[in-house]
Image: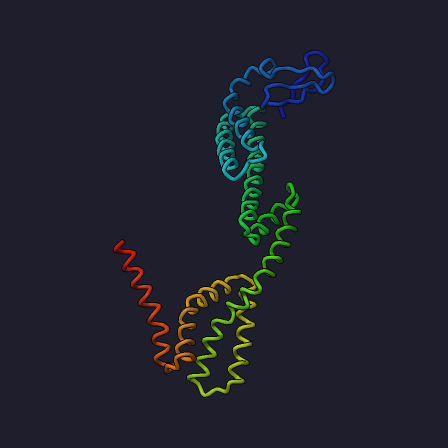
Length: 260
């Protein structure tokens, strides 16, 4: 930073532009920058922006919103610093750059914590891994991984049930419409259930497809099974009713809601 000398002992002064003062590294005397630098008043507006930005980032509750506001202030201050080619202008520009980096870290950390609080542990893990060494990011990475494992264990019963819906439809189709032995139908049902259940357990993109299709087909499947095995209706008619009845109900609900 710009170098000034103590007016008493001639020692080097450590400058604090944001406080407007400096301290002699030799004798400890404090001096006002306005007394040492006549042009210091030209930078008051820039310094006010820097102090405001620093205050936004200083609290424990500093989050995404505060970081974004601080970045805007740092950028505005930096734009004004460009107009000054003095040592002070260069020093303040450096403070602006450092402030933006700090605000970026705070914003990223707050975003990762927000994902963690919302139990989006996969997203939180990805964000915390980018912040290696910042605050307790390493500890949060461990917590995210533990929660991911725990969430997957809790997901096993759900995955097992959802994974059986589509294979059950395939089982009924093969058994009723195809000339296929019951043993082969069961083998296909077990293999497909295991595969789709594992996909749902992993909770990836394929899981979303399987869950959506399964939930859409669940009601028709139940209606079909009841009509065929309880009321002994032919499979063709049962399939038509299983698909048609839910469709008609949904249409009626939509019409009623529109009128309301």
